[in-house]
Length: 358
Image 1 (cartoon, rainbow, N blue to C red):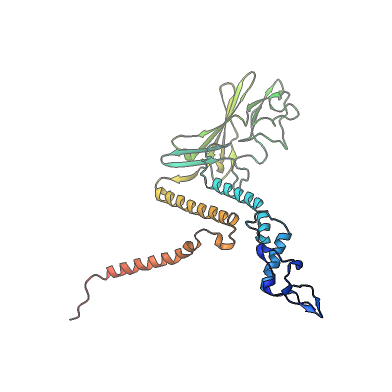
Image 2: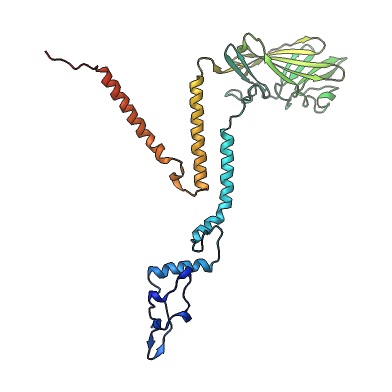
């Protein structure tokens, strides 16, 4: 039968178990004159702690263990730390970039224009989709067409033309896709009948685009989209006046020619209506801007602090939010302050004189 060895017979110095051959004679029980094998009790908190420490030494050193008796869980957690540090660093960088103010892109994109006039900022975005026009001012057919006598004008605003039907048929179309793909390599094309044959000339390209107001004194009227093409023989251009019309989209049935190869056409379209994004005296003002900046800073502080505490300090759950007690106490502080103000104004409204009964 196994005999229990007293606690004094167990040497746990530096986390090691005493070997059986080092057990003192007083710790060896005899039965019928013969020494019995020293056996340790498998019960008791002292043995459990020693066994746990012994397992740590058997498994070898773990990355991140700060001392010889470090728990295995800390070693496993330390193995995961490089990956978690990478994720935390990425989130911190993304948060900082999100908080950094970005410059306005108004007027810098294709077919976009932002103009400030009389303390009002007008924003035009012709290619932006709307409920009725998912392609904005762009023709859903891939092109607009205007024919006057024997001259035909094809054009697309803010992009190159696409022909799924009724393509131009020209004997010469080298500067805009060639005879087989005529009109697909430019944004505006004119076909003139010469000797019974149609000769096509590119008068605009999407890369050469300029957007300006129709009337500098009345920005709400619309914009002029001008595109040009530099040819070997002649330089041409097309100016499309996009007037604001919230009811319909209609291109005129005629066009004008000025000079040798400068064309002009009128288009009425809802996309020609500007969006007023700022009006002086009706905007946020300096106080609203200051409040927004403070709010963004608070949100950034909480976000970055939570990421740091969760990934670097290992704080889990809602406790990862920095200064949690302060944020939780804000509603009660605001309520107490409001009650104090109400009580103060109520006392002041009653006056400092007590009522006198006669």
